[in-house]
Image 1: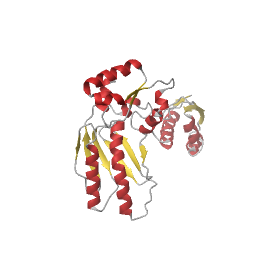
Image 2: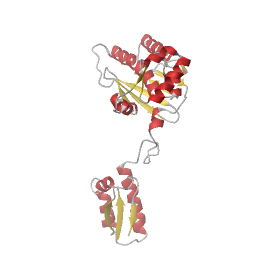
Image 3: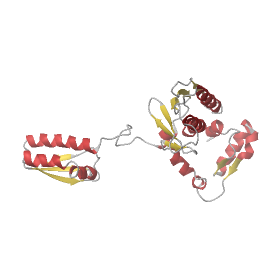
Length: 273
């Protein structure tokens, strides 16, 4: 708690709320020694309701864990955090400007600059960060965006190093990583995709099942084979890919009995007599 106050509580913060008397006193004592001018900004939350809910912090946390961030103009940011780097893509989204395309792009990029730096702090993103601004043909516009980004980063308490913008609007920077990011703190690795963010398509799974069934038929498992799969795979097998089962029945004289198990991983299946 005191580390958070030390690192995050600056004069840019209007208020700090605490819902525990003992912790409240600890913070006051700490600030009396470090920066007494901040003491009046610390407030004690005395209501019986949950403080996180009262300030809608839970909803803000959910938004901060989403990859897409909407800008007020209708544009958007897409933030992807990988092991190697963080990629931030600026998109026009729903925004349609009333002037030229260049002016529209410039306006969205300017709005994106402040929100990008805010998201870096909010999500505690560190390491190598690559920002893909919307392409601007006017070199003066590119310079303005770069200068405004550099200015916004001076307000960031974490140490950053900014490299020049490329001709196609790419900016690379490094931000000192002091703690795990918000996503790494509040989320765990997906047991399905193991961090890849993707699983096999239904068509791919069904083709793997076909190969396994053909091997089973060649081994002479009998004229009837039981196949246990996830319900979505079952629906796909008996719908768009019904021909796969018909092939086994007509060519190999094997009847496939499909059984559904909602507890199955979508990529898993079981074949038996």
